[in-house]
Length: 601
Ligand SMILES: Nc1ncnc2c1ncn2[C@@H]1O[C@H](COP(=O)(O)OP(=O)(O)OP(=O)(O)O)[C@@H](O)[C@H]1O
Ligand SMILES: [Mg+2]
Image (cartoon, rainbow, N blue to C red; front, side):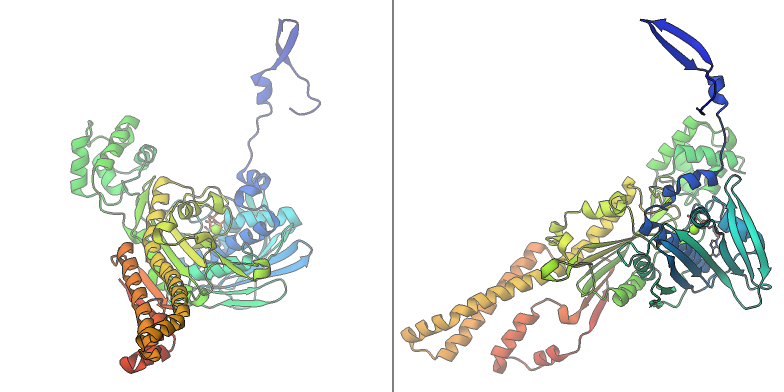
């Protein structure tokens, strides 16, 4: 209650000498006020991920870059994005993001960047990086609340001259305030935003803008990203794919996973006159056979007006949906990166010794939203997170690259379905003994028409059961492949150690045998070495049997030939020792240059 206001006592109760003053509801009602969404987020900017000095700056970059990528893809333009961060003073930076997208019209630019909860993406069942209409307008507000300065915007749509303007937000009314709007005399198509922020910090760290852009480039190989850091250093992430992904198409909710509330809400807005036609037109994969199945299962007349559909009747429909088999959701609304593109991207940027890449089929989760999971497990090369490791020098650790609709997620890892799924797997089952300390990069891209983020800051995916399960399945499938390679490497090392151990005693045994049998020492030496190799080979076969070789997986598997573990060292050794018995081509093979082997299963 405001200070200095008179309290109106309404009831006084005396009991055991205690007096209580109760404030009336009418009095409290005088304090009742409405506030705009802009005022709400101005006070709660942490909900938009705008807290923590480093995190805030990365989030700002994320919001602008995701918008640029979305806009370019929708306009079928290969994205060319330029990001520049300049330090103005301590913890005071200027951010510039420029794209070659469709730009914004004079009429929409204000609302798009200067009004919260306004945008083109919220109401559609379509995969895009943005979905709330709050990202860039949140940045505009942050700039204004930390520096008192408006954002500078240049937009060019290809029609007429580009315009420049200054933009801020009237938080009380959640409306854009535009100043100095003018046409400019140069060619420009796209959107360029320049905004200043105080209380933020640039770091070249795992959660900094550079790492964010590196991961963006991995998941968006069709985009070209140029970055200038505050020291003036320039980075270019070149595109490795020259086609814009086909734009996703809006889809209707899939019956599996749709909730009672969804059905009741949709039925109220449907133009259909009968429940049967409402179900056919408003849901994905609803054929005649499915409708007949539902009609048989529900107790009410399917010819009734959908607007009159009751909650208990919608419950019957949901129950029927669960019992009926539907075709898997259409993947029209989803655009995975794709196995080939992930492979090329990772080869370019991580250059691993081995990797397995897998794109699973679309599924649905609660709400009828289709989703799809892509994973890759990369081993060796530049895979894994590098830590300083003290006197032992740099060490590699497990790195989990999380993506939602191809956008990197750098924060709130512990709270994210992807991290939970990775840690829920018993990697030892796949012969990956100590995954946390292995030079491994696990990439997971979760795509959906609606990502169940844990908050408006869009940094972690909620651990919905269907989501976790599907990510786990993908990881296990890929883990089997990676495990075979990694355990092969370990076995190779063990085999070499064993061989050295056996070889150490050969001279002594040769001497003893020679003394007893008088057989030529060289012959004995050769035979004993052969025996050792034979023994090690037998071990290999036993290992392979125990592991139950499984060649039925899907996806793409790539291993650098120089690192292929199978028998190479042992065979090389054998070839050298018994040259005269071995056919020549083996030697040729060892001389070959490093190549990668790619096989699609
Ligand atoms: N670079 C851009 N080029 C063209 N249009 C843009 C660009 N940036 C933003 N927009 C438009 O402005 C709208 C608002 O952007 P904003 O980032 O606030 O929300 P969003 O991207 O829709 O959702 P989210 O809050 O999840 O990011 C977008 O929906 C889009 O229509
Ligand atoms: Mg956005």
